Amino acid sequence: MKLDQDICYRALQTRDARFDGHFFTAVLTTKIYCRPICPARTPQRQNCLFMPSAPAAQGAGFRPCLRCRPEISPNLLGRLGATSTVFDRALSAIAAGALDEGGVKTLASQLEVSDRHLRRLFTEHLGASPVTVAQTRRILFAKQLIDETDFSMTEVAMAAGFASIRRFNDAMQKTYQKPPRALRKIRTVASKISPTPNITLKLPFSPPYDWATLVQFLAGRAMPGIESVTINSYQRTIALEQCHGVIEVRPVRGKNYLIANIQFPKVTALALIVERLRRIFDLSANTAMISEHLASAPYLASVVTARPGLRVPGAWDGFELAVRAILGQQISVAAATTLASRLVATYGEPLVASDTSWAAPELRFVFPRPELLIGEDLTKLGITQARSRAITSLAAAMTENPHTLTGFQTLEDAVKQLCKLPGIGEWTAHYIAMRSLREPDAFPASDLALLRAMEKREQPMTKAKLSKLAEAWRPWRAYAAMYLWSAG
Image (cartoon, rainbow, N blue to C red; front, side, top):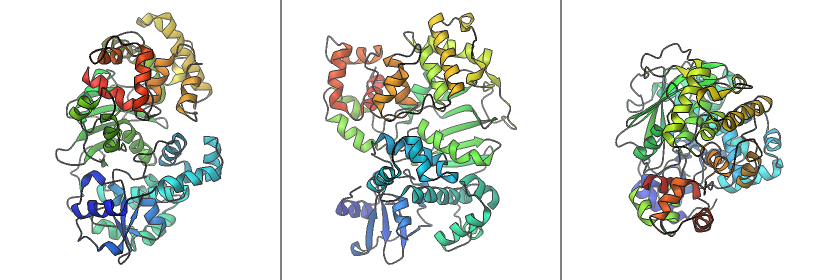
């Protein structure tokens, strides 16, 4: 990734928050790297190296700043603006701990590329190898846990993905030139969040952030019993590794981060939970780049200007999102929500969690696992026979192959393979790709709401015409869809 050194230095001088996560400043005289918003005195230009990612800076021998805390950068793994499907999938896998036990060759094999090609992609986008990225992720996430939780050092090491407490101590000493316990002693009052249910962490983003539009979208599609959405918070039940939990995410006025409250019994799942939350709330999006592109495209300028910081809502779980999409085929959002609530009430597993007194009382279930829906007659819930077959067939496919909804190379490949599943057409495939696979160019062109929104701008409007117009919106058509939906 090439950086304009002069632009980077001007952003550093002004501490422009819009560039937070876009680059890191490595200072030659101190051997420390910082975020662009670091409150420390601005170093002289000749002493600065501007790096595309924290792993690049750390791999070059620089250590993280203790004042600006690179571990809470909105771009911890350095993917703002990246549009390579393989690269994004690799980053997601690393964030989920793919290299904690396996190697680069194993990861490359899972992505169906050579390990040489995978290393080339990481060098191109981040200036660092996959192994360096994984090591930096573990170290910086551990630093955040030290600063924002009261975990023991053993729990911090486990949650961050270290194989042993010895490796954890060695890595932290080498990186910060201090033992982990010393880092906790010097944490600032500002970084210590007041106690809330179980675990509380910051989820940073690069401003602006249109929280209101995102939660409005999620609220209309929230499944009773599993999700509770208000203008000030998003709560839901979660299930991982045969355990249940509850999460809450809320904004903080005037701050460039969301707050996540996490109640879950296994600390080893914490990194995966945080990564999934970042994807739900699209926290790594480069909204400046996206809005600049879409505002210059036909028909979108006014709505893009009206909604700065708009994001594409993700999903907690691919199977859950796919079932919700199938239920929503050719009916209203409200009707689909009613069917989803019946499905959850009938087949959902009762929530088993140690402390849910702080959560919304309606959170009583976790979404049913695929194996619980195999062979079931869902028509008794008011679901049409065709959609009942589609859901049960998908459940059977997921039980046989858990990667049914994830093993794709490109958006085109994803749509093609998803459309082979019974009951899944082009609209459903693009919707799944948009929200679950996080494909920024997914675009359900046959969506009735999109067609109606465009008819306000130009009539008549057809799927073919909309698809042709949307070519100018690539590679951000998913964001264009969100702008049009929000305008409607």
